[in-house]
Image 1 (cartoon, rainbow, N blue to C red):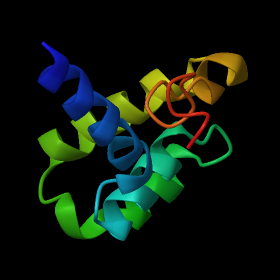
Image 2: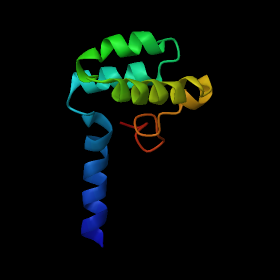
Image 3: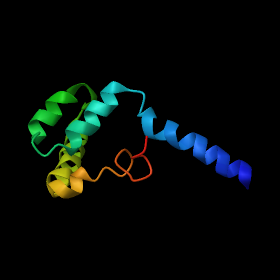
Image 4: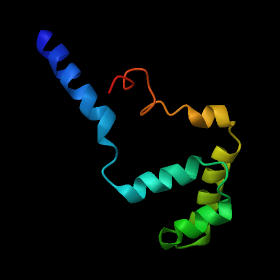
Length: 88
């Protein structure tokens, strides 16, 4: 049990500072949750991954889900802004 606690305490700072390891993915996430980015702008940003109309429709609906959220909800990034990661 003590070993588990030590591993968790050692892993938490790494988890909080690691990120995804892919800057493009970080940019896509940032643009997805940014309410100032329109659906058309978002589609032009990821156009190389949208190959057909069904994918385009899915991306539009996905982005619209975030546009429907309040700014307060979008600001609550539970992974990076959590109370557990605050000290790191």
